[in-house]
Image: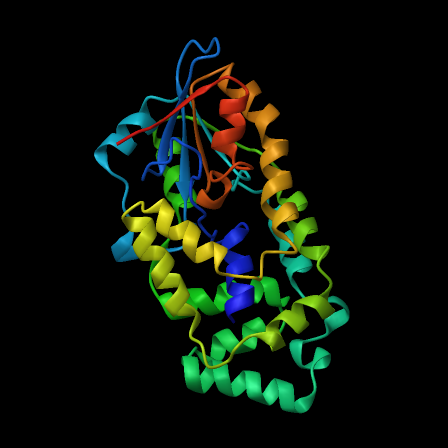
Length: 289
């Protein structure tokens, strides 16, 4: 599950983390956006979307900066209508009532089943559920099963925003994100699944990333992500292109109000990352400790 797990972390549900590689690189998840004519500062926070409940953290200074803002901006607005939820659920499923085994040989399916149930020890109910869902998304079910009780920063921030009576919005739509996934053919997703090393536990990579995330050690996270090959082909569509598209939207938002922006930490990093792109636009980007 290593390849699909990395793609899964990079996308909506459990993002991967990549390091800040500019000259101003520092270990921080929260960054202040100011200057360039802004009347009030805004803040951008790098999330890891799925985190064990006992490992979740949001420091007093982070909470203070959150409370100082007027609006919350996520990758997508998670306050979805029932129709949007139903539509997304349909798109997650294999088409025409097909299941995972319909895309694999009997031996391939048996090997995968043995790996998931016996080697990883996922629940039978999780395995039944994942057989109906496209591999890129079902990897999230597996990781959630293995992690156990968890939280998501998006849900926690959404609760805080409602408490503070803050408006919540998204940088892109759920359909846009679903289209990114749907543009990867099922055959390609199956190929990635079968190419995975089934002697590896995806939790090993996850907890390695989590340890770096908790210490906000972005340099070590970059080394970890750079060592993986699964994002080489899809990195532009999942990170670089989206980062570039977000900048004009972020500028419009921060010039209107003081906003707290929360996106996967992988979007903040490097010369194609949101922090660098905002600096190129003339904004002052400083870590908040």
